[in-house]
Image 1 (cartoon, rainbow, N blue to C red):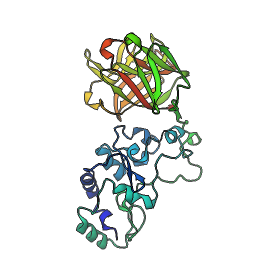
Image 2: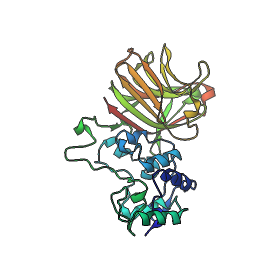
Image 3: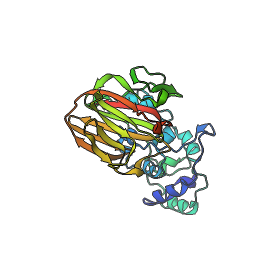
Image 4: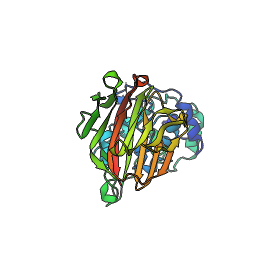
Length: 341
C-alpha cells in the first residue's frame, strides 16, 4: 500500500498540504512529466467554468501557497477560449502520471507515514473521496481530494449550449489580427505575448479591437514593467468617451491598478489596496460591464464598482501613457478572454 499518500483525517489535509508545499520545484521535467511552476494569476479564470473546484481541498491548499491552476495545467489559452471541452488544457494527468507529478514537489516519504498507515488500516474497506477503496494502487488524488472534473450528464455542457455565451480569445498569440493601433506607441508580439511600449520621444499610443462590445465579462492576464501608467480600455468610443481599468500608481487621490477611470470624471471607483498588485509578476484583471453596472476584480478580489450610463458600447483596448517618467514602461499581455453577456 502506498501509505505515503493517504490522508490522515479531514482537517489534516490542509496542514499536510501546507507542510509539503514548502519545497517548490523549478520549471522543467520530472520523469517525463512537466513540473509545477508557481504562478501569480489566481484561479479566477478557471473557476468561471469549473466552480466545483473553488472549495476542493487540493485547489484550496495550493492556492494558499500561490500555486494556481495554470501552474500544473499550463496557460491553456485555447481551452479557456473555447468555453468547452473542445480544446483540452495544455497538461492533463492520467492515473499513471499523477504520483510522479505530485512527487516533483511533495517529496516522499510521507512525513507522518506511521499515522497514515494506522489510519488506512482502521478504515480498510471504506470508500475514499475518489470513490475507490484502500488498495496498493492508490494514487495521491484518491485520498487528498478527488481532484477530478465532474462529468456532465447528457445534455449538459460548458459552452453556449447550456445557456452560457461562448468565451472568446481576443488575442491569438501570434500577431495583431483583430487589433488596430492608434498613436505612436509600439505594439508587437514577442514569445506569444502582446507587448506595448512608448514610441520615439516617449510618445503615447493605444491598441484597440476592430470590433465593439456592449455587455461583457473580460479577463486579461498581464504584467507591467514599472514605473507605468497604462490600462485596459473598455467601451471606448473616443478619447473623451470611454472607461478604463487603470494600471497605475496615483497619489491624489490614492489609487492603484483596478481603479475605474472615465475621461472628464476621473475615477468612478478606486482600488486603494496597493498590496493586491503583483509588481513583479502576472496579474489578472477582470472587468464586467453590464448596462450601467461596472465592476473590476484584481487577482480574484473585487476592487472597484460603479454605476454610470455615459457609455453603453465601444472597443476594448490598451493604453501606453506619454512622459519621460514612464520611459521604461512595458505592458505585457498573455491572455485576453471575453464572454459576451
